[in-house]
Image (cartoon, rainbow, N blue to C red; front, side, top):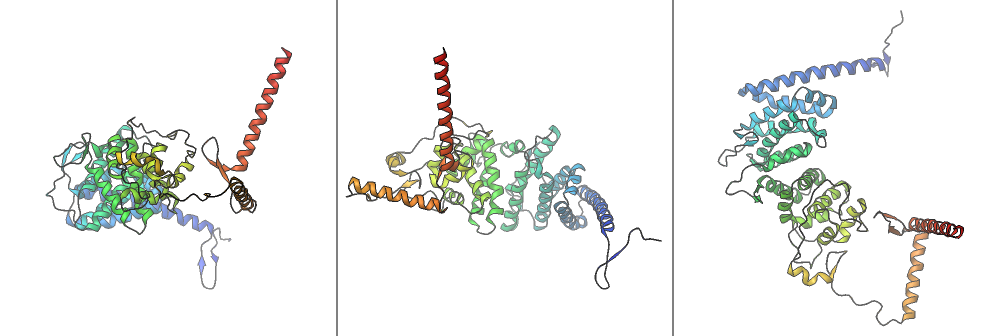
Amino acid sequence: MRNEYPIVRKGKGRLRPNVRDGVILNLLLFFFSIRLMCGLIERVSSSVSCSSPSSLSVQFYELRLMFLMTALRPELSTQLKQEGGVSILTAALDSCLEIQWKDQYECALDPAAPPISLEASQRIVEILKILFNITFSTHRQEPSEDDAALYRHLVAILRLCLMKKCTLSEDTDELQGHTVNLLSALPLQCLDVLLTVPLAPDSEQCQGVNMDCVHTLLMFMERRLESGDKIKEKLTPILNLLTESCRAHRETRQYIRKHILPPLRDVSQRPEEGTTVKSRLIRLMTHLDTDLKHCAADLIFVLCKENVRRFVKYTGYGNAAGLLATRGLLGGQGSRTSNSDAQYSSDSDSDTEEYRLVKDRINPVTGRVEAEQPDPMEGMTEEEKEEEAKRLIMLFNKLSRDNIIQPMGVNSEGKLVPISGLRDNALNEEGKSESENDGEAEEEEKN
């Protein structure tokens, strides 16, 4: 009798299943993973209601296994979310932090409370990583009323994760890093909980709004700017979170702008030179990594209320050119991008007295006052100047013909295009206008 599922022999003494057996094996592994995930959900849910020392010692490994499964199998992330994973893990987070609630979306923060223990911080980090895996696609979605309430409840707990300290400073930094990652994944409209906490006597505030959490995020970003390793992985989440928060909340933008973009006074050095937060961010605007430089440029652009003139004023045209080219704003057409949903106030950017005194001497490309340079054409006659201009034109033409450089220009949409394309478009427009004029003349002669 012929074997319906033959075993394929590969190499001496080794047997490997054929394609059908591989499919069956994958299905069995999938169903086993589903059952295992269901068991882990039940275990985590029961450990919240019964937090005995023995169950807590095992919970870390259960959470780590759950994280690995959701990271490697996206379908398991979907299943966990459908099974109420956000609610279950939020309750587990509440249990780990031993939260005392003052209001619906306000956790009690006791400055005299002991720091988070090493064991608790490890479990919290695993929970945050799992929550990120199952919620990362909700950032741009409009949540339902029930989901919005659940996410706001979670954000209130995440605020506590940002404000509390761990036993070790390295653990505090790791906890805040994963908290930032999760905040950047949640719907933006649910992050207003971070600002609705009543003011305390020692609170950071802007126009009566509590800025303690925003200040903590700023300090976290500064520490990440100072670290030299894995700069993209460490900086892009916090830069994106601050950018979106500044777009959504006017008070947040004003508070962060005071810290990052104070009024210009000393313009004797380039904007990217120095050790300030502003100079470090501007240096990132010309970083080799495209994602990182766009994140840094977006934050400063939003702090400038997406105004091109103000953006160039603070960064210099050389540093700003990358973002302006990407958004089609090189020609300065329109002060803001058309697809921006942000609503900015109409307050003006007043110049300081020190800036006004040297404003006319600032090089717009470098963004600083340049030392006066001698005129290279001084002492030359008009004929010599004309000959030098012709020589330069010939050199540029040669470089262009040899494809060493490609002359570019700015089109009507504010984007860089080859000069040849601009010339062709101009000729086409002239041809159209001439044909229209000829047609109008013929009609007038008939009439």
